[in-house]
Image 1 (tube, helix red, strand yellow):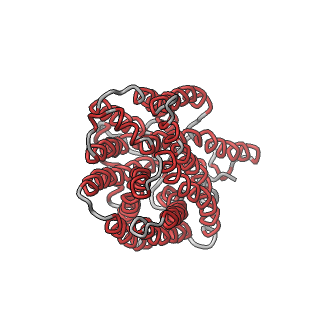
Image 2 (tube, rainbow, N blue to C red):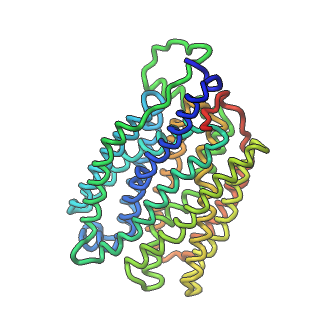
Image 3 (tube, rainbow, N blue to C red):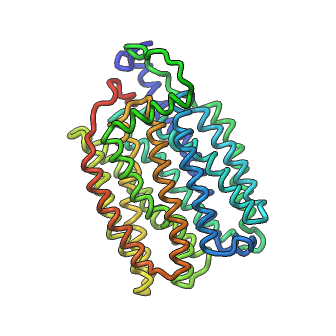
Length: 432
């Protein structure tokens, strides 16, 4: 097989075009992946009213946490399977299964069934993000990787925005929250087949020195892959950097509709849209700009993506103070300002995580590496959801909670600046 640097111009151009086709194919999958998550948050009041056995805020937080804990464990497995076998099949199977479970969620009748549905949803969705981002990184090199990932992440933001409007559907007596899950599940099932046909894994470049044969099973190989990652100090820093801000982000994503509704006495639909639209729209716009900026800075310094990500993290700090203090100031406008600023910072942060990972981990370990990052992040996010529900039951002030989140993000900024990028691939998998 020819090395990518020696490909004929026509072949290189075809590869370049398909690199962007991959991003286009995965955009709607990313949208669906997060649409379901935001719908459950935006329709909380209707779901709890229709399923009385949910009972308390703590139980609702436990349900949200259950999804994250299951998702966390299977992110590592999903990432390893994508690296070891096929990113394409991991993506398509994940979409098909989670779409079927989304449809089933609209038919649950008890809290126990809801817990099971969210647990199975966590398993199926865990296989998508590590495989998708690693596949994009395979096709895009250092000059386009941040921009390509940012466009994919725009699909996530669009999914959250659309999910925010689901509160209006839940409020409608002729529609309801169950119909929203039915439609979303059917759309995903219908898209899975054409995606399977059109999506392709990037052919692997033969290694210069073949890897020695090993008789260890898949569990042993997974252990070796994780061992190699854990011996990389920059990777450990990235795991911490990826995790700490996500604690605040999951609370914002999962609880903000309910917070706005209660604190400012607005409707479920208005609260759902306000909680999702402003910060996700800001993140959407910021991610594109941050992706372009990071790719350009990479021409000057290998730390370009790190600097852009750190800039975003510093914007998140005042954003969290604003959101936490808005109810005490009786200022809905301050809350929205904080959410917009949070979205801008999150866009800078979110589009550069896989590209930074690609600077410290080789192509054969990226999905596994991102899967473990998801494992730690989602585990912490699940704990945050559960504990936040308990703290709200006990009357702990939002200003105290969100000020703590802000302090954690200051620490995160220090961590990312300590990461040392290196050349992890000679061909770069560049899209021209």
